[in-house]
Each structure stands twice: as C-alpha cells, then as structure tokens.
Image 1: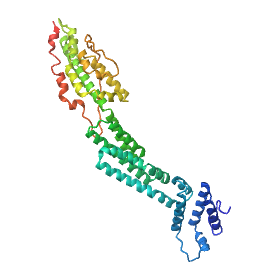
Image 2: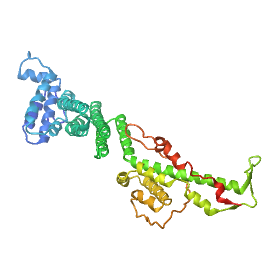
Image 3: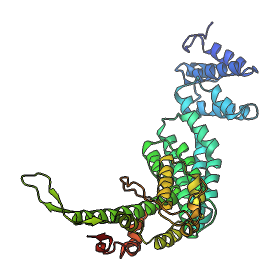
Image 4: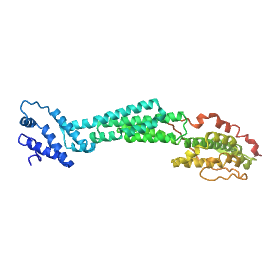
Length: 413
C-alpha cells in the first residue's frame, strides 16, 4: 500500500527497497518485473540520497547513473542463467529514464557489432570470390537474422539505427545476388542461376526497412523477371518479324494487282481517289495466291529459326507464367506452320510443344487472314538486349529479297 501508485519520497523509500527486494527473490516473472521497477524507481528518485544516508553516511558520494548501471549489471548477471534475452528485456519493460536507456545500450551494443562485422565479412568474401556470392548472401541472412530481430524488438521497427542496419544487410545481400548472377552469366554456367539470384534478391527485399532500398531491390527483381522470360520474348520477336515481313510482301502483291486492275485518279478537295476498272484485263487469281504462298523464302526462314530459337529454349518457354505472351507465341507458331510444307515443319516441329502437328507430305500450307501486329521489347539484367532485327539486320532482307517476283507473268489479257 505504501508503494502502489505512489512516488518515492523520504517516508516510503524503505518500503520501495523492501518490496523490490522481496519481488526480485520470487520465482514469478511478473513479480520480478515489479521488483525491478520498484528498485529502479528508488535509485532514480531524488530521495534516494536520503536512503543512502540512512544505510551509509552523509559523506558517501552518489552518482545516480553509475548506481543504476551497477544495479542493472548485477541483475543481468543473475538473470543470464535463468531467463532468455527476450524475457530479460521484458523484466525491464516497465522501467524508464536512465534504466531504459542503459538497457537498450546493453542489449543493442553486441548485436550491432555482430551485424556490422557480418556485413563486412560478406563483402570481403564476395569481392574475392563472386562465383560463391550466392552462399555468402545466404550466410549473411542467417547470421544476422537473430540480431536484427533483437534490435527490432528493443529499438522498434521505426528506429533509425535499426532501419539503417537492416538496409545495410539487405544491400549487401542484393549485391551478392547481382555479382553471383553476372559471374554465372559470364562463365556460362548451366545451372539455373537466375532463379537462385531471384530468391536471394527477394530475401534482401524482406529485410530492407527504408522505401529507397526496397524500391532499388524491386527494380532488380523486375529486371530478373524480364530475364526469366528472355527466351520467350526473343522467340516471339523473331516470329513476329517473320509474320510482318510476310504480310508486307502480300500487301505489295495486292497493291500491284490493284494497279493492273484499275486506273487510279487522285481525289480532289480531300476526297478519296477514284478507281476506274480497266477493260480486257483478266487476273489469274490462283497464280496470285501461289505467289503469296511463296512471298517469303521459307527454307531460309526455317534455317533462321533453327539458329535463333534452339530446342533447349522450349523448356524455359513452357515454364513461363506469362499467359498472354505464351498465347501470342502459340498464335505465331500456328501462323508459321500454316505456311510451311511437311519437310520444313519437321525441321522446327519442336516449336509446337503443346500439340501434335501433321507432317503429311500430301498436306500443303494455306493462306490465313492477316491480323494487325504490335511491337515488343525484351530486357536483360545488366543491359537491355538488342532486338532480334537489330542484331540480325541482313537476315530478314535475305529472306525477302527476290521474293516479290515480277508480277506481269501472273496476269493474262
């Protein structure tokens, strides 16, 4: 009754000392917590000098800070064998002032030092051996997980020192991911290093505390996501280029056919041109369709596809989760196969992984409608990949050159 809800004064300081000592000897954590609170309140109180004078004498010099620290150090020594770190921190959770500040220092100094040492160690190892940077990043996460959790519980998730340390760990783990990926790519390793680098980057994202650091990590994750789809993106780009070249050739044939069928008189005042049918002109439409089927040198197209879309790429394409892009790939492959003969289909049959394709020599390609197309780009981890057409400027020209044959031969008057 003398201490409950009361401030320490010259009349009740003995009660605070007695009740505090009694509670500290109890086996209950709640009682011990109350005992810690009672004694620390006594030491921090102005009337503590009066208490000291009673048990000592007036010549005894009192340093409140040092006395508090000495008391806490003694308690920590006793608690070490009885309580976990989390429980010990709990026992001091009702304290304030000097006590709380010193407890924070005691329980953060060691983990901070360890975290900083682990970051430096990982950095040195990564610099010397980038091939093993993946393991160094994983080890850093494991070796700092407990300490970061401890700091977060003591300092709070919004504490600047905690956030700085968490970010530094995350940044080093991210750098391990980047160095591992780039080194594996340079060495042309056959393992799935992209997925490993992705997992490590996501590990870093889970540790980062500040928005700037999280945004940087997410940018790198997005880059890796694009790299994961590189084979699919390049396949779609090549097949789309082939389709566009075919459609352009067919449009050129249609244009020349139209010029032979009609006299075109320019419109006046913004009106559409006037088409006047020519007399005694007969078009061999079967020949026109045949010319469209041969609008590209399909043997050269097949050779180009075999060089650019290797069979081993199909496994990665099949694993893609980009449904829209996969559907576009399938549509473009269907278009391609509608133009090839049985021998040509056999050479690139691996493209059509999702269904069986007839390669009967009696079957022949048929023409299909020409839907509109759109452009796509592909990305990479370190630097953007060039578009297929930019890397192979002569290939598509070689396919198209000489394909649109002199059309007069397909008409008869």
